[in-house]
Length: 542
Ligand code: NA7
Image (cartoon, rainbow, N blue to C red):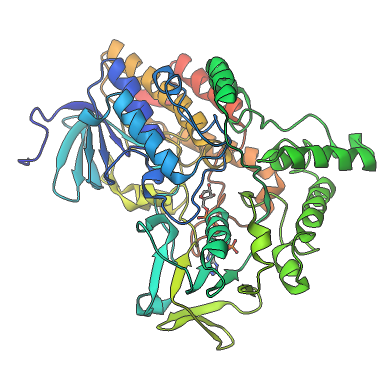
């Protein structure tokens, strides 16, 4: 078909993406004898961390959880901080590539643009933007949940005279010292940029934060890792990586407790919250009372504690009311919480201001800067667009994936996402996705989610090889049942009562539906293996 194809045109498995999912898959599948390759758009390993170079970019899952549970890797790698920054994460992924010898089976600098199922040949024909063509029996997308960046539909986006970048596509260095800079969006990303730029602009510069919804950020409590700490941890790592699969979100500590808020007196509650707060990380948000996401009173109590702690750090009453209002704007933890180090202190600087987009939204980007509804123009030299992503489904829908009935995946999912087990979808045989729709994805730590998913896929592929089967296709009734289950697991949470990136509500016009499996990682793992060991009843295997 193409002079660029692999010579024998017949690999077993093609993985799209060289992040945690792709690296783990290539290593695992290749060891099991499957001829596997990765295609990656970037120029190195890392997935989202290859691209994440925006100011202050840092993971907010605590060491050592945000890493691969592969002994060859963790026995030989040493982290320097509890919450590693993007540079360290890039180095980590390069190390993973070398240590596991992944480079020889990875094609960098190629973006997959289409994949078509060939029913006759029982294989996928996968095409890249440079014409590179691969024939593969199985296709696995490991493209992450934030593969499609989101820009609000402002007409003048291209008219800006200054420098503007989306957080997900940040160049090497943008000097902001003495400049007039603006950040649009205050999610996990915007917060990190603001925290960094507040310091980098110096006294001559100015930072304007354009905020629609304040993030609910807790203390990261960043620390360096000492040599002793590293050695002590190394001895326990094998267990840590096993145990993370037994917690709801795949962290070492995140399992909501059995404790209800009503089990405590007021004083006990205050002490309980305070302890979680002092430990830092996501503990205050996820290791809290078991009913924080089901009981409005408990939810409000957690918010009030957070607001009290946060308000105490911001001196100016107007800014204080904007970053930590007394009345919550939405359910506590309804959006993903963030972690910060000295985010709130930035607002105590005279040259850091905040604009409330709730009363005065952005209507356009103009050559001079940002224009608000009341006609005000904020003149700027540099703008950071931290407006997020078309999460979970956006990246997969962007690729022209055409299944056995000739339909495109995006057309199928535009009517509502349908998957079986959050890893497959009917009429798209031999196609899997990791950290994707209706899997534990946004409710779980990345590597903790993709490793069991990849292990499961390996189990299925081995079964098919043993039984000489060539085609696996989810049954439509199985995906209807999975969708129902995803819905049932979601509606019990207060999170379900509001719009967010957990349900597509952050993207105008996107269908609002639960995008993630909220039943917890252990429950999910049990279900997928029950299906595999029960004879794959939800699939037609031929
Ligand atoms: P998020 O968390 O989706 O944040 C996007 C931010 O952009 C959020 O504050 C939005 O406000 C804001 N936004 C979006 N559209 C607009 C418009 N039209 N006007 C003003 N502000 C807007 O993305 P992040 O990149 O921070 O984080 C993504 C994931 O990466 C995160 O979940 C982590 O897993 C890491 P809103 O809240 O919608 O009012």
